[in-house]
Length: 263
Image 1: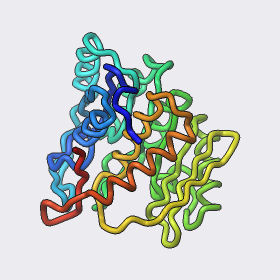
Image 2: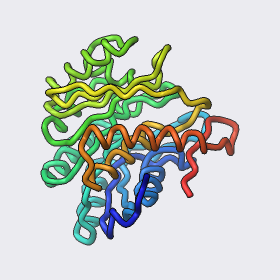
Image 3: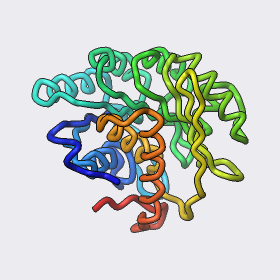
Image 4: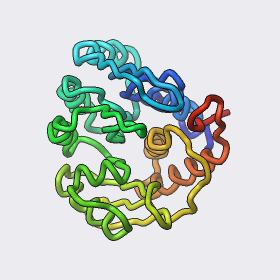
């Protein structure tokens, strides 16, 4: 259960892309932060041309503009936690590393958005090793879906045991905990957390519908719970539960996928 008075007047920061449909990216992250009672702030890595059906185009805003947004914001409002989503292009990776290095003592959740559901790449594939090196040892948790986890670990993921091995490989590679989301498994759904010492499995029912932005929603919820003082495993379980409950309330306003409604 969410109790807003836990949050006080703290601010959370989303570093992600702009989705005009508000179904994902900074707009959704900020809505989730506010749902938990935090001030939601955001800086943009890229602007997309998309609707609830597909991504048509992406314009990366570049590292200078990204750093300018960040420096201007933090001179005024210091974040208590950071969520990173779509980076947008390889040029933004050094800037992201610079930002993360300045916040070693707050929760940081990274959702590695490499490719849109419609298939369009949102970060150059060849830039992924550089991206991983910049976040190595600097974040609280990485939250890849099955495709992203397979790409990072070099392993095909079709069942929980393969997910556990992928999570282990990812933790070995970037030295931070990893939550592999199993929403696209063919059979039963399970999310797998590996913190470098222990595995935690979170099985759950598959929710009906086709909702846009579930990865953004879960990762921003997870950050909120971490800032509220929950342990990593507890925050993952609570964020997964809150995401599932919110999926049931999602609605289709356009001609494509459903989007989250937070009131």
